[in-house]
Length: 79
Image (cartoon, rainbow, N blue to C red; front, side, top):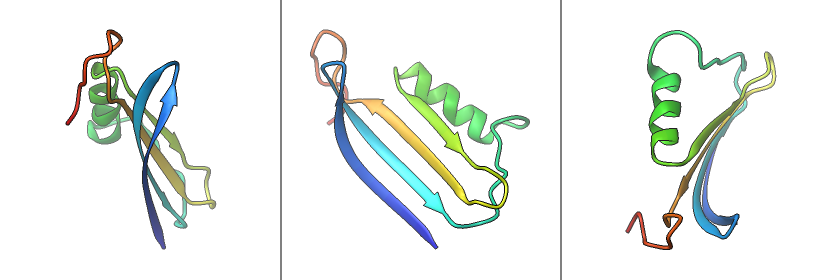
């Protein structure tokens, strides 16, 4: 089963888009090697966001992306 959640939260006075994808698979995913998840992490950080992976072996995987919706000066970044 896969669950996808999308919402907005406030972090340090900045609105943040949060996208979380969770599954109940075998876990064990990593951000090392290749350019897949590591490339996504680099792109998120270039936009001032972050990509967090939680994937313990045997316990499924959760991938959370957080991107700022406003810049530090308050200008809208997305939408």
